[in-house]
Image 1 (cartoon, rainbow, N blue to C red):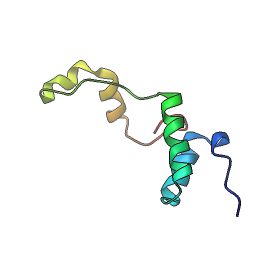
Image 2: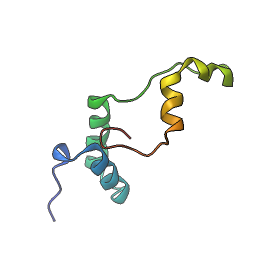
Image 3: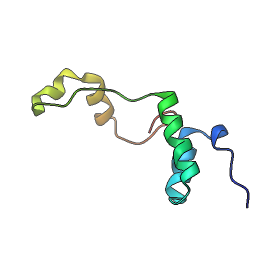
Length: 74
């Protein structure tokens, strides 16, 4: 069986493939590379308290809208 073209897969499809084929390290590394290349996460420093979350409205918005991965986000 031949391997799929990981570079041609969407982030969402590659995520699903990695979950279905957990022992496929090549797929895992392709997925991590894609995550780094697309860099669609919200970075924030460690929180000192729950009130610190109010300083990160874009993070709160993502949490409130659900954590379901989109085609370009995981």
